[in-house]
Length: 154
Image (cartoon, rainbow, N blue to C red; front, side, top):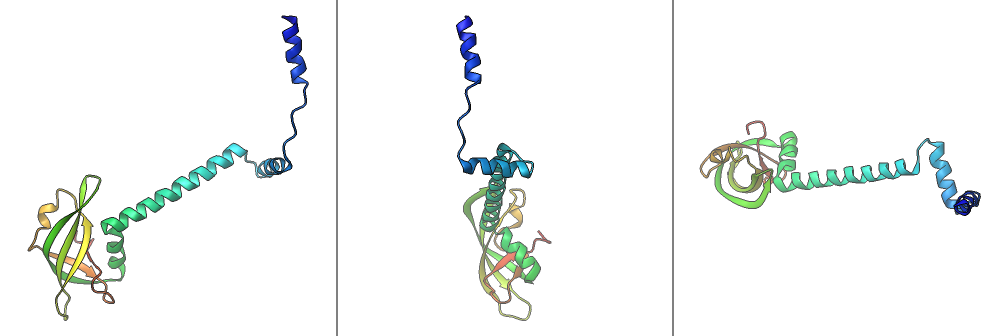
């Protein structure tokens, strides 16, 4: 037993191996700003998680047509439209289907035309979006094929 105690004491007296110069510099820089290496790693991980969440949110907005609707809400012109066809896109967000629409858009003072759009619809609102229904839409005057439902009336 005394031998083991002596051995433990002698191991504590052994000098630790020297770290490469690069690691020592990095640690001193973190100490200068008051942050440990573990905290810095956590900050990097959190930033990457938040940025990937942002990318996913933008993709979902694009797939559901919500992003286009927001843009046209600001820059587009309002028109009346008739729903000609509805189709399931195969995408579901929070148990609500994303639906593809074919619309006949009738801008004021211009000739009517057909356009396609996509929108996520609450399952409760599906009966309001059937073929033959009249809806308010926003369209891009520079590219009339870009159409979305008016979010204020929806």
